[in-house]
Amino acid sequence: MKQKTYRYIILMTAACLAACSERELEITPTDRLSDAVIWESAETATLVLNDIYDALNAGPIVSTWLYLPSQISNDPLENFTDNTLSGPVAGIPSREKFENNSYGPSNALFDRTWERMYANIRKCNLFLEKMETAKIDEAQKKPLIAQARFLRAHFYKTLIDLYGGVPLITDVLDNNTQGDSIYRARNTYEECIAFLETEADLAAAELPDTWGGPDIGRATKGAALTMKGESQLYAGYWEKAAATNRAIIESGVYSLFPDINTLFAPENENNSEIIFDVQYAPVIRSIRTHQYWGAIWVQKGSGWGAMAPTQNLVDDYEFLDGKTASEGSAHYDPAQPYKNRSKRFYANILYDGCTWHDRTYYTRLGIPNNFNEFTPSVTGNGNPSGYGMRKLLDATLMPLPDNLNGSNAVIYRYAEVLLNYAEAQNEAVGPDASVYAAIDAIRERAGLPKLPVGLSQAEMRSRIRRERRVELAFEGKRFFDLLRWRIAESVFSKPINGMKITGTTGNLNYEVTRIRQVVFDPSKNYLMPIPQTAIDRNPKLIQNPNY
Image 1 (cartoon, rainbow, N blue to C red):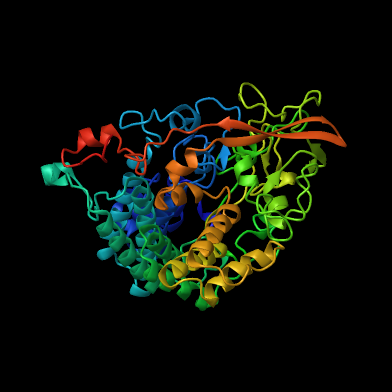
Image 2 (image 1 turned 90 degrees about the vertical axis):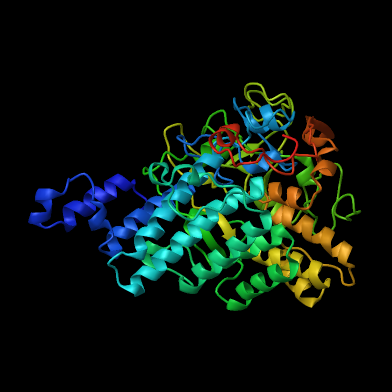
């Protein structure tokens, strides 16, 4: 769909000039299509749908800055967890609001999310309303409607994951004709999950398994079912989540991409593992993914280090024998803590002494002119944790200041389906053979041994949670995992650490150092505060508890 991501007005103008007859050109403005013309063909209706896809946000876009509809931003959701923290960038909510718990209805963490999601939902509602009477062949109309249903559900899921129950609005609101009836109360969380399930099923019934050519990137049957399965998982509907994710596995449409090192590389976009991603197209958008997330260099590139992995995350990466240092791995050497790690560690983490962009990456103290030196205060240049992010980045794309570069933003992939299934099935019936099979497939790709046999349900739960953390690191899943597992207060009650390295090669000293403490109030922080502006506009909205 990269060819179809140009701004809506440009596409509409081009379509108008190409499609209008001489008579139509006499009465129709040449800078837009009339409402009547738009709904006369699948081609013009698709242009409206493309505008809705455009709202998905394919990278850290300058115009949206810190605002979310997804993980993709220069202050990603991962920074609101114990996995990463932001580098030396000013105005970062994860540091300035989240750490000290200073956020609330008038000082929201994700202050534009509510407004933007409902604006996107309104576009979907309008599209679906117009399609009811559109003069389009039913065979062409059904997949268009299904895509709009999927996108509307995706936007609703963003709200539900953050705020719990929200008003489910499926008509086009107009205060001129509807008056005060445009104000809607919040639906319950259970009603919202049921809505997502229904919408996903309706979409999946009319969507293909795959798209080809310029339509690659559009919603598929698998994308709709994955969204449904994740929603059920987040809600704790274990049996239903297991069944939905099992159906995706048994469809045979997806498989794990064999090389974990190049899974997210631009040359491997839309590979066998990708279920739904947002297509990146250079020049069309001002996206500088590698600039925002990449390492800070002295001579090459201009990375901002927006996600610095913590020691807490690094400690969860196993060594080649399938054990961590705390579990007594025989491969762990405190003098060389980065040797004999799994493939996943090397694919995900930049650590002191590794090679990146044909250079040695140092975070140790004492290297002259090193902007990546461990600097927990995060003032000016410096690395706040002693680690850098490698996953999702391509060394060949490390930018010069004027470069636009990046790759597709992955929303759902098959490894997550396997993890979702394993968790749901373990909670529903315990660690049966299918749970082991799902987790072991992911571990095999990472170069790790299979899980030990005979694990109890609780032991398997712990292994699945660790597997999710390291496999899905930097993909925006940890934030919601901490919330739905109700473990955030426990996790944040402990120090978040980095690694301070001193000395010289061959005689280095590794010192785990506290770099962050997050204040988390379990009486309210498991849900985000609804922005006060939304409460002020809608007298029927009730704020989340204790805000």
